[in-house]
Amino acid sequence: MIKKLNIPAALVALLSVCCNASASAQATKVAIGYSGISADQLVIWVAKDTGIFAKNNLDAQPIYFTGGTLSVTAMVSGDTPLIQASGPGIVSAGLAGADPIYVVGGIVSLDYWLMTQPEIKNPEQLRGGTIAVARFGGAADFVARYALARLGLNPGKDVTIVQTGSTPERLAAMEGRRVSGSTLVPPATFVAQKRGFHLLADVAALGLAYQHQGGVTTRKYLREHPDVVRNFVKSYIEAVHRLKTDRATGLKIAAKYLRLEDPELLRKTYESSIDENKLPMKQYPTAEGLKTIIDQLALTNPKAKTAKPQDRKTSSMPVSSKSSTRAATSTGFMAGRNKRRRAAENFQCAAMAMVSTRCGSRRDRESAASIQSLIRMPILESRCFQASRRSIFCQTSISCLASWVFFSLSSVIKF
Image (cartoon, rainbow, N blue to C red; front, side, top):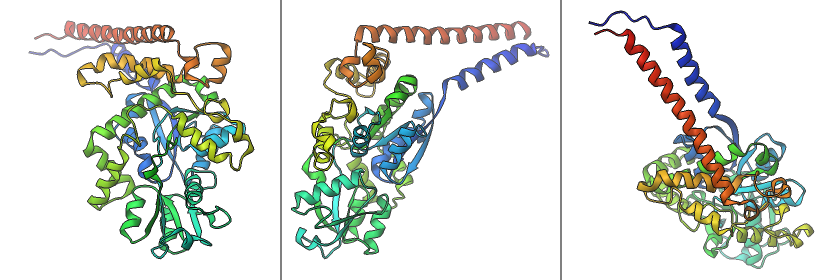
């Protein structure tokens, strides 16, 4: 027979406060910007919808922008400290004096097609026409100018470039015959092709190294909130792994955000999104891809002529460090399931190496411009182990409290 319990109210209150304080103290509310409704944003959506951000102590609020340049402006101002953005806007902001920096690579090659009206089947027929882009200085604008030049046309002279908005708006402009063509990404590329528009140039087929949609913040935010950035990097890499390995979830989230009902379009969009050449497991920003952008910007921006991918002003984080590569490739998302516990510790060190601003000299701390100068693996490992010990201490304390509660309850329960 169970007698009536007489549990001290203070005990219940203490346990409640401890649990609530532990949960609330861990999650950090942060705005994460992205631009465009396209498959390029799947990693952010997967991290949000599957709870990956929450698992890594981020109360993430994805914010939609109609163009990459708008999201970059919001990041520089501090309104949206973390964004997913393409290289042209980021490099241009760096050349203009801002302090953006890539902390995770995302998509590292072009996935654009230059699509035109059905009757425009060669470059000469496009002469005198108009090409729609999202915003001047953004990825679609960069690709349009690059593709037109490769086709022997002078952007701005032979072909007019106009701003119309994100991918759905550009496709709508083509359908309304307000423009001659546009640079599109999946699934809009497949939709446009199905509706009879002509593929004038498959820029994606060039295999051009290009720093496309990746995780970006400012050096100021990186210095002031290293834990938040570290958790963002961890979440991003885990979401990449989830997208690549969980087909059902990937298809479901793509269908939800891209509003795709056609199974064939959905399948092609998903398979294009997880291509290793486009979205690699090793999520390093690409110095070669940044060089592609700098070379193109140098045609119109004198500041870009002397810039290098490793420069602070071009917002790159060099990816040539062998120690950081080894650490990152041993993460649980790239290793077997039987190694995940040990890999998680290695990944913590790798993520810290990517975003830490506490290592190296004072100049290194202030600039955070080079992973190679930031990585001091013995120091990082030591701090990782210290962090692990602190985590274990917290977990042990909670376990002890739980044991004490159980013992207290047991002492008042009579059978």
